[in-house]
Length: 135
Image (cartoon, rainbow, N blue to C red; front, top):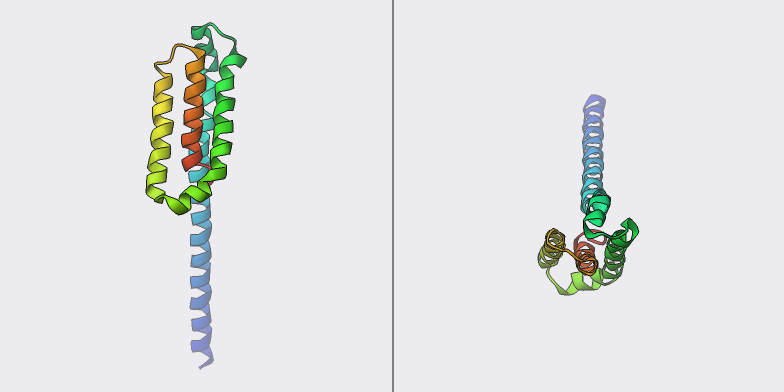
């Protein structure tokens, strides 16, 4: 009788360890997803400062302002996302955010003036705010 109870306790312990591992793995995967969704919009921008600013004939700081505007737009949009998540389908919200960020980033490839980069940076920030920080 005692051995059967010990075996049941061991099975419970193994199941608990497996659940704990699964939850830990889930947390790691979700952190990776958050880092990738935020990192793509923020960390990749700096690579293009020098060549684009030279091509436009402006200073790097003037061009870098588009990234600041993008992050400000992301922050402001993130304030309204919880309300939007209650009213709009989550899938639609993500699709709209990814589409806006993607189209704005693609539009930057065809931009030839600084104000266009600023405008597209704001649009990209709004799109990123819909799919990155809060969701």
